Image (cartoon, rainbow, N blue to C red):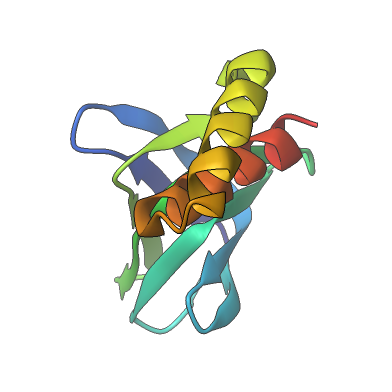
Length: 130
């Protein structure tokens, strides 16, 4: 049994398709979703999102927080990842992410609260992009 996965932001649909499993990082810990999962709503952390495709390969993205909503109806399980921003691993500009990380780290050293979130976003992109 598969999961119908939708990764969306306010601007666009990043990816949609059937997956064997979806693994997300919630603010309270990790959660894995398989077909037939009970309904669920999870607040997401800034972190990687992993989706195992039907052929067994893993598709990895990064999400900048948001929500994961899981529903099951008539044998169909749907997982909607609603993120403020999201990128697939192959869409990440690693050089830009590293520059963003350095800039955010400098601001964070000056005790800028928003900079800490920017550091987390840049670090997550670097990890996901490899």
